Length: 114
Image 1 (cartoon, one colour):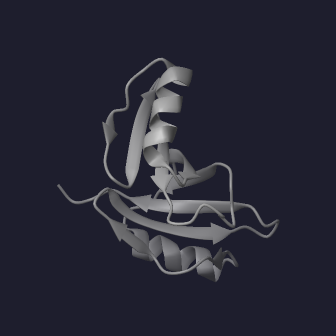
Image 2: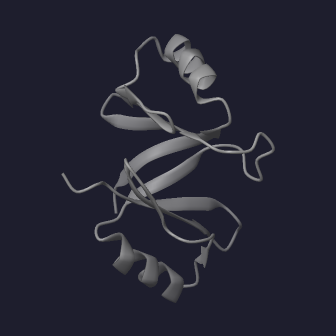
């Protein structure tokens, strides 16, 4: 698998976008109501709006490109990765999160059909 993007969960997406524009010195590739992405030397850094300021997990989450995502979800479950809820479907694609045996969170991503 290849890395699709790395994301930070944020409560105030607009504030986070403004902050990272200053940090990175670039404008986002796009900024939607629930997601924003910056392109940094071919890699994607995303900010994902979450609904609660008291997040269970804070910090970066690495997402791997997974096409088709359904097959990869099953494969990961079969090798012992712990699923963290249902697959999510958004305008920007499908996401699924897992925990590895050490408790680290990672995800799978399938881009939307164009």
